[in-house]
Structures are given as C-alpha cells and as structure tokens.
Length: 456
Image (cartoon, rainbow, N blue to C red; front, side, top):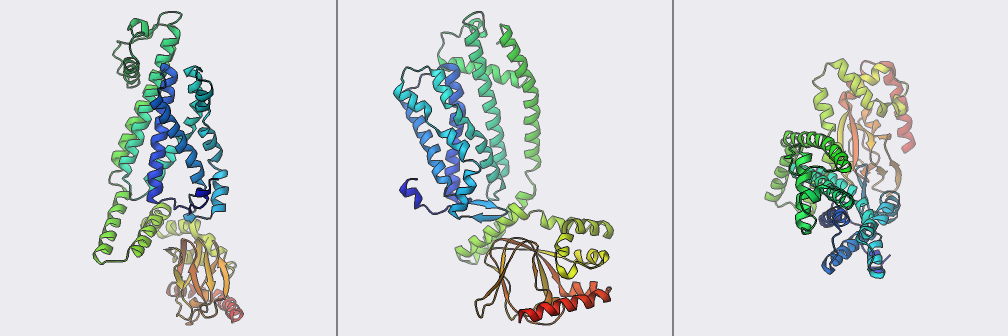
C-alpha cells in the first residue's frame, strides 16, 4: 500500500468528503457504461484526449480500491472504523470484483500493441462494467440519508437506467446492422448510413431504440433481415416491460413525495433552527443530528410499533407485543419461570428508548425507578468511584431490576458504548402487574436480594 495512504485516518461512511468521492465514482462508472459499448459497436477511434480520459478514470477506480481500506462501514447501526475490521470486511465483499474491474488491461494493450483492433480493446474494458451495481448501492445509501431528497435521487436513478438501456440497445442495433450488412441487406444500407459520420449513425440508432422501446415505432427504420427481425422482437417485448417499469416507478416517486422521510426532514429542519437560534455548540449539534440520522436509518419503525398497535384491541395488541418482545423478558432469569399470563401483562408495559454512544443510562448513587432490557448495542457497567468495570452488556442482557423492588440507589453506573436500543420497565408499571401475582412477587424479591448482596 502507498505510504501516504497508510497514514490516512479511517473515514466516516457518511462524511461529506466521501459523498464527493462517491459522486465522482458514479460519473466514472457511467462514463464507462456509455463509452465501452459505443466504441465496440461503432469502432470509434480512440484519440489521445479520450485515451487520457480513460487513464484518469482507471486511476480513480484503482485509487478507490486503496481508499476502501480506510472507509468505515455501518454494522447494525454502529460505525466501524477499526482498520483491521474494515480490511476484513472489504476483502470479503467488493474487493475482488473491484480489483477485476480496475485492471488496466486495455491500456497495456494500447501501449504495447497499438495496432490491436478496437473491438478487442473494447472487450478488454468490459470488466469495468462490474462497477455498475455499485452505483445503485451508492444511490440507496443517499436515499437513506435524511439530508438528500429521495425524489430527486430516485428520478435520477430511473433516468440513468432508461438512458443506458436505450444506449446499449442502440449500440447493439448498429452493430447488428453493420455486421449483417457486409453479407447482405441491412437497415444501414436502406437508410444509406454506411458513409455517414459516427454521430449521425449513433443518433439514428438511438432514435430507433427509443421509438421501439416506447412502443411508438414510426416505421421509418425497419429490420431488413432475420437477425434484425429477431432483435426487434426482443426489443419490443423489452419495451413493454420497460414502459411498465417507468410508469410504476414514476407513480411511486410521486406517491412518496409527502411520505415519512419528508416529514422527518421537516422535523430535522426545526431541530436545526432551534439549535442555531440558541447558539448550541457545533459539536453538540452534530451529535444531535447524528442521533436523528441513526433513528431514521435503523429505528424508523420503532415508534410505529407503539403508535399503530395502541389502536388495536387489547388481545391483538398483546399477541403482537409478545411476538415482538417476549424474548427479551424470557432471557431474564427472574422471569423464566413466570406464568405466561404474567409475561403477557408485563410485555405491554415496555417502553422503547434509543441512546447514542457514550451516554449514561444510569448513574451510581442515583435513585432508581426502572429496569432496562438490551435489544441492540453494547453497554458497560462500572463504578465511577473506583473505575472498576463490572461487565459489558450486549443484546439479551438486563440491568436495574433492584430498582423495581426497593427504593434504593444505583450500585453502579451504566454507559453506552455504541448506539443502543433499550426497553424500559418502570417500577410503577411493574408494581401494577405484580399486584395480580403475589406468589411470583415473593420469588422475584428473593432473586433480587441475592443479586443485591453479591454486588456488595
């Protein structure tokens, strides 16, 4: 690896600098998707200017491979910036395909074998097209970002798909006409386009492609042999599907213009205005916005769980709550031998809470009034007085149960290490449920007493 690259710090996967770089990658990839089929079909001569453009595009793709070892990724909502983990992740995902797509085989052929046919040169660049699916991953990433306009991104993505399909079919249509015309009649001969310049030939090919795919088909350019006829059949069938695809996607884009993302963006705008008017420090503003971004990308359905389910009859709501969250309670030893009806009553009392990294959940010596269940993320239980770390808690763990039984102070502090999704059971709600199960109440007190004594 180049020395200066080894000194690059790990980049945040949603940083502005990375967004600029990804935009450049999209344009480079689209350039390859356009120019490679065009050169192969039309035998376009590669002038020095376009050769330099190719070299620059290849350099960007190769540089991207090195940079990917320094770009963090998101795993279950958590930002991973450890270089060893990044390296392992990249080598097991896109590294092989990116490496194959970046090998400058055609440039080496051009330098050492300048008389090689243009078709062979084009074939040597076909692996560049392996980068094309990466564009859609980038678009999806932008679409999930609340700072981007989803409608604009999806419309741009749709236009790219439609144009490239039209372009590729135009290239194939000309290639078929040019190949079959050498041994018989073709549409190029009928339209007297053999001696025209490449621009005119391409525009006529693109015109036929668009009119055929859109099912307009004016009939001024028609197939003249069986191969052209078969290809026309295929394009006509494809055109029907493409037309439905376009209509469906445009309708979906229009329908979603006022969807939840726009409402969320409006809310985010109000939050930004609020913090700006009150001169909140920029570092704190960034933490707030990062929290909202996380909420949008990974927890946008949590509030819906509780808002929508509250409208259901109690029996249906309880069944759904049990299906979604009963597992959290069953992992807790205190509740493992509880009656099913107790769990059903208790699970409806859980309240969701999302916390950012390095945030205190509870503090040592504070009065406790609730218990916590960990659904996602990592937390650390420790003593602020001695610095002793008691444990690192992961999904399925629980803490704070003593506060449900006694008016006591917290015996430890708990701090989030990552973004965490917790469920809270308040003492008031727990007492209401426990009143209906006196036998189980005694058992819970015994278990909690043992845990309390072991901590001392």
